Structure formats: structure tokens, C-alpha cells
Length: 297
Image 1 (cartoon, one colour):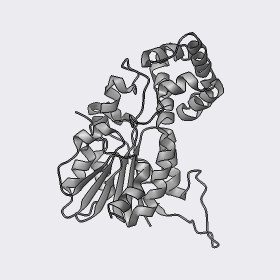
Image 2 (cartoon, one colour):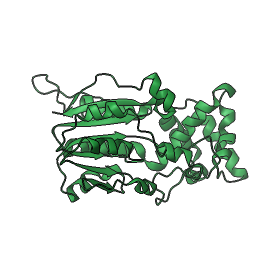
Image 3 (cartoon, one colour):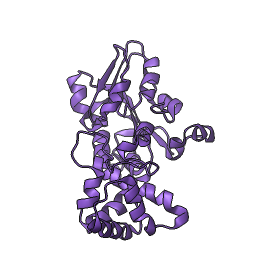
């Protein structure tokens, strides 16, 4: 299967779907969430975004469905183009799809030998190999510390800097071998995943795109419309949580003259919804998923 939709039932409940409403799937992928949304629509419409050209192979043949082969950071522009503002709900299942992870040539996974690519949009120029082989050592240290939350990022940066003097680092296996010595043997898989995560976030400018999506969501949602976001690591979840609670990414709550909080969204769930043991057993990708739901005030 291209991709098993994570927290599907909870996502649909979070959207509080109206059969005649307009909805957005910001991360179409294999189309699992989109098909489930369409099943609950009558005269409503669904617009789905995905920057990965391969996602176009899963387009749904339905007059109520529109596929937009673009990054969700262009949300407002394309919704305006399709005369679809305001919308009643937005769903974003962040990160990498199972299909992308399992395609060795995409370079997303530590499990497969492949080129150091990691581009979600294969037409963009910068790749993980370019970052690994050209970034200054200090820039690499910052990248792995901020995007991988790796405490000894200096070791990773130094190992890469030394190894590339001998020969370019072009494959996932090469990179894994180069940085493995920076981590305890019994925790290498965990830390290698963080190294790959940091590179992927940088290659695709993921956090900037997420911030853009969140800010635009308020602009395009109807009053009472729902924002449903599934994240897979703390960097994403922190941005989503802070934005819902305070309207900014730093988590600084603004108050009016009378001391009342100035907020644009109401959190539907105070704590993130996580998958149960059965879902994790059937879909290992769900293990780190956190779902947050908000309603535009």
C-alpha cells in the first residue's frame, strides 16, 4: 500500500465534516485521508495539495475532488484561484509518507541504500548530498542541533567535514557509516534517524512551510472551521501547539486591555491525541504521531 492513513477516525471526527462543506487535505500522499473525507461529503468539495509528483498517481476520479501539485505553503493562492475561500476544514498529516520512506532512491530512510536526495519535490535543486558536501562545519553543527535536536551535533558535523575531504558523501549508507561513531552502539538507529530528519527538514524547508500553512489557515478558514494537524516530532508539534494556543510560534500569549487572551483558535483537545497500541502494531509509522485539533473563533 502507498500509505496507511494515520489516526484516520480521529482526524475525521476532528474535522467535524459537513456534507456540503469545502475541505482541504494539505498532504494528499496516497489519498487515504482524502477518500475518507469524500465519503462523508454530498455536495461538498475537497481540494488536496501535494508537492510530490508521484502523489499524482493516486488522484481520485471524482468531480468533487481537485488535486493541486504544489507545496501547501501556497494554500491561500490556490484556494483563491479555485474560488474556494472560505473552507470548513483543513487536514495536514505532516512528514514523509510510507511510500517515500520505502523508495530507496528518494534517500529518506536509514534502512535502504540510496542516493542522498531527500527532496519531497524532486524538481527542486538542493539535495541532502549538496548540504552534506558543501555546508560549512559550523552550519552543519547548527543544522543537526536545531533540526535533529542532537546534543553532540559538533561530533556529527566534524565527522562529515573530515570524511568529505577524502571523498564526497553521496549515499545514505556512506552518511550512516560516517556519523555512526558519534553515537552509542545500542542507540545508533535512533540517532541516525535524527540525523536524517535534520537533513530532510533542511532540504525541504519544512518548518517554514508549516508556519506558512498555519498562518494561512486562519485566513482561509470560515468561522467555526476546523484545523487538524498530525505531527511526528517535537519541532512540528511545538509550532502547532503554540500557534493554536497563542496565535504565534513562540508561545507568547497576548492579552487585551482587560486582560483577556487574544486568540484566533480554540483548542478542541487540550492534549494531543495519540494512536493506540493496535494502530501502532498495524502501522509502525503511527508510533510518534500527535494529533491536535483547533476551531477558528
